[in-house]
Image (cartoon, rainbow, N blue to C red):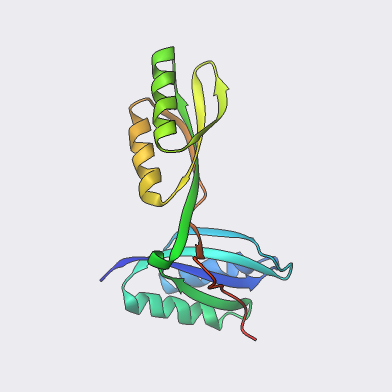
Length: 168
């Protein structure tokens, strides 16, 4: 059964690593739905979160191919039921009058979003959450007119004491 899989990879913090990984995906015909990369608690490592769609066979192939790359230290399939999975979205919405502005602010409050910029005819909203929450907010804002939209992609971390650490 095809579904989204969230993979977290610890990789060497070196130039070109993201390019090698995305190139491997392209060569094998796998599509990356989202990818985020950032530093970790160790200066030598970066944490890469990838979302890929596919069945268990595709997931197994992606993990095997990632593990073949020298720069990849460890790959883990993150269980959504045992993890915190979030995205960040910045959305600039057309608010030509007080009524529209009040409605957008009220919706932002309901979604626990924050107004981060105000101009005479627009508001910029910052929203974090899972992709379903962000998609729902975007659909709600379409009626006002979306001027600009930026999403980070998924990032994830296992709940509790579990951690993803390099092999020893």
